[in-house]
Structure formats: structure tokens, C-alpha cells
Image 1 (cartoon, rainbow, N blue to C red):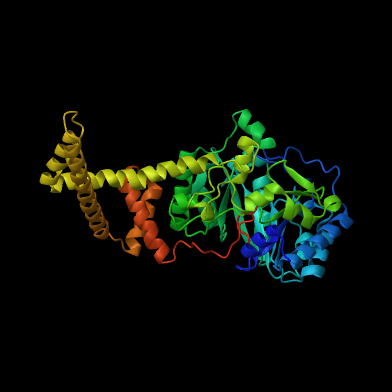
Image 2 (spheres, one colour):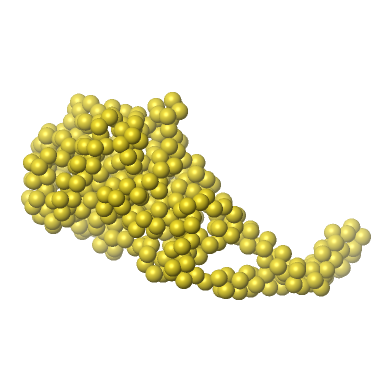
Length: 481
């Protein structure tokens, strides 16, 4: 018999054949000191030994059997490629799940010796996500340390030579959002198949950066513009990106995806189960309390799986959004709090797609139907008159409402016909994206052209809205199913 928690998970995991991914932070040690890092330190005191990771993988295997879903392994840290646990962990993964298990490695790319790459040779579905924070040596090294850019480039090229899948991930912050087009030019130059972005979270060292004014997270308005630039950069440069991040649907309803917080596993270097590696919140120790017990019964995880987020429960976009739970925790200390950017962006989108078209529809109607316009204002004037009888007021109200309906219906039809006359070809849609990449186009006309161009590019599969990816909800950007 399934428990209620297992039923919720089974509906998501089994019905869609999605894996239950597990992120293993096999070390907290790192060979870099990035000034935006969400870790507060890189000491490795209390880290699990090899036997501890064997136990955790065994419990993970049992949980997969209980939920009847496939595995997906993500290795992270710290820097996983410097970990003394790497070889043992890979051996255990191979013994339990075979060489075809989807295996992802989140690395800074600065330490990729041949003997380390050789450890992955038996796995057939390996994906390396290499982190960059600047599109060139000067900007990258300012954040990650002198010499780190050239080392990361060398590491990335070695990974490509071994024919492993690779992508680049950039932290999207106030500072780096100005470099979005440069990031895509960098990806194209290095022939990186995908360039992805993850929002800056002010926690750990990153919180100190925010407090000292070095960097900060994006406001809702800035995030909207950044996502727009990401979309344009991807199309213009011909480099894939992850359009399934939460809040992308507010740029276009075909984009965006729920973050699946609570539907994946994150294990820190001490064997603690966490909601996310980007916060200090610990659910419990797996070796003491058991993985299945913690995962299935923790109230925060259960609430996240059922979508119980403040103010979001009845939102029609919950299935494709959910906001960023890391940003919610950083702001309020609660994973179930709202992502402020989601609410503010949605208000702006509603204003743009409902209020402005309504205003245009009414203006078009007033210009085309002067008689109905006069009737509309006359009826409302009588309606507001204190000397009108109750019967007269009732009649005038009905007449005014009829005028409103006819006015608005005509205006909407007029607006629809106008849009229908401006259908774009694929080449025209591409040209709009190129133009927008060269100038900071503003206003309703530019926005409408942008939306129409997105539609055409999606129809022609130039923007892939159903990429073969799964968002783990934590450090990963592009994770193979």
C-alpha cells in the first residue's frame, strides 16, 4: 500500500517515467573561492567516508524500488572532481545502476586530469556542466579568481575531446545580466551545445557579496528583461538554452516549467538530506533517520510536492512556475514563501496583456461607433444622476451594460483582425530577434513584434519548448533524462 506521500510522488514520477534524481555533494572542498558562492565555507570537517556513500546509494536504490522509478545521479560539491570519494562513488553507481544510468557532473572545470576523466569512460550517458561567470578571462577571473578562466576552458575542451555531453552554466545576477549576449557569443565560439543560467541566490558567501554591494539578485523587472535577452541571444547565436526555468512562462506561455523542488533528492557532504544545496536548511541525517522516512514524511517536502506555496495554491500557472524556492528561502527563511519576482512579473504581464488591449479595444470602438459611444456616456451620466427614479436607473444600467458589451466585443474583434494581418514569416521572426539584439527596443509595438516572433519560432521548432531535460531544482541547469 502506498502512503499519501508515495501516491503524490508516484503520480508524478511513474506516470511520466521521470527519474527520481539524487544530487550527491561528495565533498565540500573546492579549489576556488568565488565571491557569489552559496556555500558559506569549504571546510570538509565531518564529511562522509566511502562507506557512508555506499550506505546512501543503497538506501537510494531501495527508495527507487519502492516508488518504481528510474535513477538519475548528479555529482556535485564543493568541486566533485577533487574529491577522494569520486572513484569509490562511481564504482558503487556502476555496480547498482549499470553503465547506462544518466550521470551528471557539476564542475568548475579547472581540474580535469586524464586519470579523472578515465573514471567516467564506462558510463554511456555522462553530462558535464561546467560553471562560468564571465564570458572572458577578465570578467570571469574577477569573480572566480586569477587564472580560473583559462583552466576552465582547457578542462571544457578536454571533456569535449572525450565525447562527453557538455554545457556551460552562468550565474544570472545584476552584474552578469549585462553580459548575456557575450555569454552566447562565447558559447558559439567554443562550440558549446548549451548555455544555461541559474539565478543568483544571496546565501553563504553570496550574501556577503550582496551586503557589501559587490552583486545582488535581479529585481522582477530586471529578471524579465534578462529572460528576454536570453531568449534573443539563444536564437540569434544558435546556441541552446534552458527555457524551462520557473518564470520563463511569463515571457511566453509555451515556456517555463515547475522547478520540482521536493521531487528530487539533495545530499550534502555530511550525509544530510536537504531541500536544496543552495541553502543551509537540513531535513535530517540519512544514516540516522533513513532516506525514505525523511523524504516521504518531511512536512516541507510534502508541501512543496503538493504545491502549497503562499499565494500560489490557486494560481493557474503553478504547474509551469512555482517560482524559485531558493530565492524565497533567502528572502523569508521559508521554502513555502512566494518568489517576489513571480508575483510582480505576473502583475506586469496581466497589465500588459489584459489592461492595455482592453484600453485599445475601447478606443477603437469609440472611434468606430460614435452613436454607441454617445449612448454609453449618456446612460452612465443618467445612471449617476441622483434625481433618476429607481426604474430609470435600472433601465439605464441595462442599456449601459449592453453598450459596454457591444463596444468591447467590437474592439476585440478589431484587435484580432489587426493581429491576423501581421502574421510573420520565419525569416521575419528571425530578423526581429536580430534587431532586438542590436538595440534596446521598448514600447508596445516592440513587445507585440517580440511575442509574434516567439510564436513563429516555436511553431518552426527554432525555440525548443520540450527539450529532453529535467530540472532537478537545485544546482543543475541541463540534466539528461
